[in-house]
Amino acid sequence: MFEASLVRQVETSDAPGAARAGKDARTVVRRTVDACLAYGIDRECDIADYLDFVLRFGLDFERRPEFGACRAVLENHAMVGPAKLSALASRLPED
Image 1 (cartoon, helix red, strand yellow):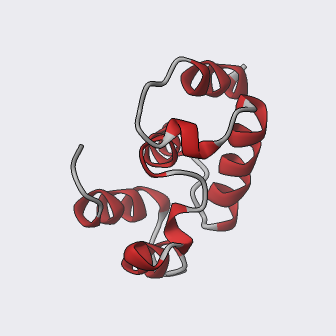
Image 2: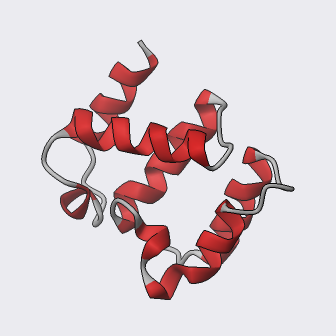
């Protein structure tokens, strides 16, 4: 049920990164959920928020050089998921 709502979020998004995220919404969602779990982001609301970043900036945005600070936050095992998302929000450009 939760993943189905994320698929709808991808399919209906007009965010600039949605096109970069890929055409197959289920693949985008699966890769996003997998990345979140690997980064210690496991609450559904936090995964949905992370998907918003993916839709704005594209899949694997944290691996792009201009978002290197984001990757450092995500790989910080001392931080919990909500703190990571807050830190990402302060480091990513506004729409």
